[in-house]
Length: 165
Image 1: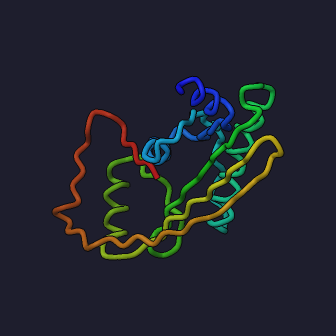
Image 2: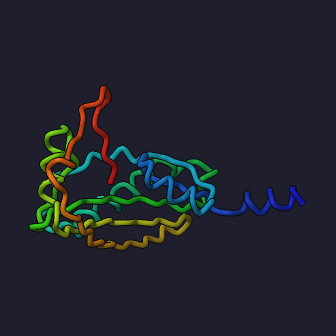
């Protein structure tokens, strides 16, 4: 029985997560799907005028880069590559980057307090062989409750600030 399952598993396409995001890996872990991670290492361009187009284009760029990097490897002949990119827009519709400093994080929290903002995620899936490409952009409205200044306290730890979208 185990041998049959192993044979069936070997026929399944390899699922490749083109990301080093712990949040994206956690989603695949939660649905208990076997996958491997191959980060795309794509340098993210400056934000474009159209945030939806930006996340869609960048997720496609990431998926294509990983697809190209594994092209000659037989073990990836049958594979599904998943790549995503997320941006956060402030309550006024402007894309905001990840804060690098604690003061920037506090300012961001103050800006979002008692307001709604949009999070856009572009997702691209490439299925091989055949190089079929599927894309979508998901828009999520996030509502912050009012954050009192006394609650917006972020102490400076000894490690760098890491915020994952």
